[in-house]
Length: 118
Length: 108
Figure 1 (tube, chains in turn cyan, red):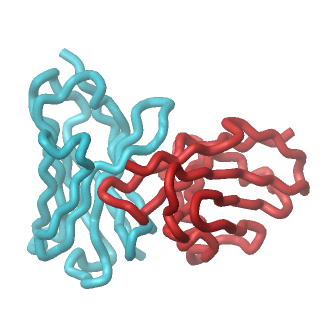
Figure 2 (cartoon, chains in turn brown, cyan):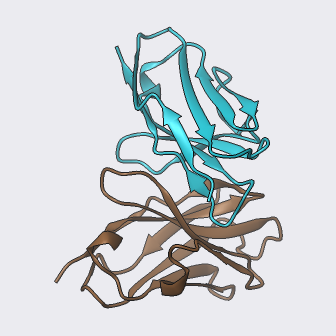
Figure 3 (cartoon, helix red, strand yellow):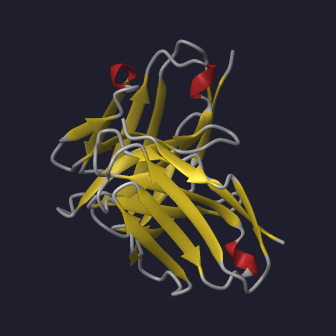
C-alpha cells in the first residue's frame, strides 16, 4: 500500500527558507502514471495547491507562489521535496504531499505543520 | 484562475437523510472536477473524480453529478462517519488546480 510521509522543520523564521521532503513507500516515484504534489492548508482554512512534479523533472507551479517555490525529485531516494523562500506568517500551514493520478490527488500524506515565527 | 464556490458553508442533516452539496465554477471546467472528504484531524480523501466517478473504496452512497459550471455531491443516506468538510477541486484549467472553500457537513 502506497504511503507518503512529510518531514521537515516545524518552525521557520520569517524571511528564511522552508524545506520539506516527502518520502514515498510501497511504490515507486518513477511510476509513469503519476505526478507528485504539495498542497497546504492554513489553520482552520481551505486547501491550496502549491506545485507538482513528474519523476523526469517536469514541474508545475501555482502562479501565486511560483516566484518563491521550487519542487524537486530524487528518484534514488524515492522522495520529492519543496523549498519556499522568503516565508512570512501567511505561510504558516499544514503542508501535505500527495500522489497525483491523472489530475486528481488520490493518495495523501498525513501532513506536517509548519509555523513561521521568530 | 477558476474560482469554485461551494454552498452551503455548513449543512446539517439527520442520520439516514440525503445530503446535497453544491460547487459552482466561475467558468466551465467540463467534467474535470473532483470531490474530497476531510474528517477532523485527517488528510483529505479523494471521493469522486471526473465529476461522477467514485474513487476506489468509496461507498456507493456517495455520488457526484454535473458538468460545466454546476456540480453536486450527494450522500444518499447520511451516516455518522460522514461528518467532515467536503471540498471540490477543478483540474480543467491549470495551473493552478483550485479548490472550493469547503462545506462543513454536520449531523442534525
